Image (cartoon, rainbow, N blue to C red; front, side, top):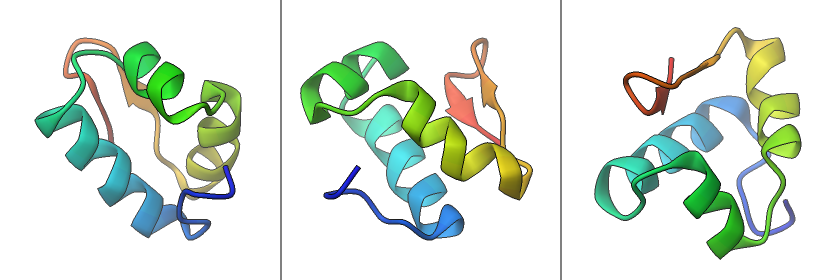
Amino acid sequence: MNSLPSDPFMLLSFINMKLRDQYATIEELCDDLHVQRNDIDAVLNPAGFEYNEEQKKYW
């Protein structure tokens, strides 16, 4: 997670942009960026953001 933004709103924007433009799934993103989904969720979930499998984005 060192290379990802630590601010939840910046991370939300970054992750959703990557999912929209580069990766088909959250798993692909995590594998390519060498991060754990749990680490992303640990920042975004407390701020009220959840991953939506259908939409393939956090909101």
